[in-house]
Length: 245
Image 1 (cartoon, one colour):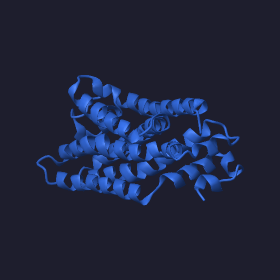
Image 2: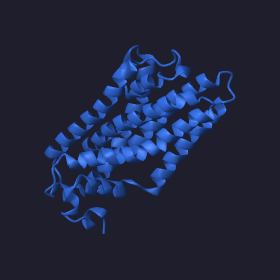
Image 3: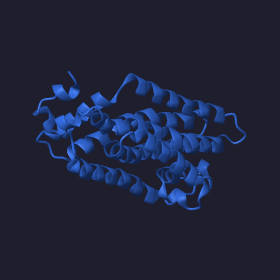
Image 4: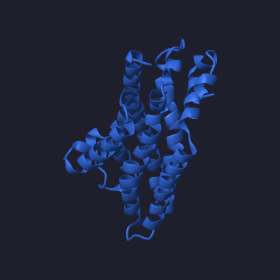
């Protein structure tokens, strides 16, 4: 019996119950091990940065180019697209769609469940990476930028999982082409990327210097949660109008 089948209407009447349900359908050993391996690489990069000529700058480079631009979005992609996407692919979403539950709750639960997993598995290793590099002043900006990046990406990829078939591939193309390639090759494009705004928060650290310049950190603190909320609202709109079978 699946988690969806086992859930009673009464238990599905709250956001907390939906949150727990999404977590049960979302979490798997291969996913956790895969993200843990990527997170371990972030710490290893921090260890190597400690022996660079400029450990602080090397730590910033590693966190910005790997932690914020690769680790966080890939983890959010893997879990975010599966939060509702797996239910769509397995044709189980209809069991939740037919329940007398406000339509906004399931997308909200999916975003919150994704954040609840992605932040510990990415933001904490990125923070440890800063300490491993001998740059403790970088730790708090690294944690904050990774956490808000996880929030923004979670909103986007939960939306993608509900909107697109094979959303993982669409999301991977988005990460590679827009978040990395275009952001680094097209002047000003970084200001329209999640990675660019997380980099702006990372710029709060003294070690960052002029390495990261994607906008104001104060603006980034507003933009990143706004992206997550926009993704959630669009997911609610899509969920309300979806042809569920």
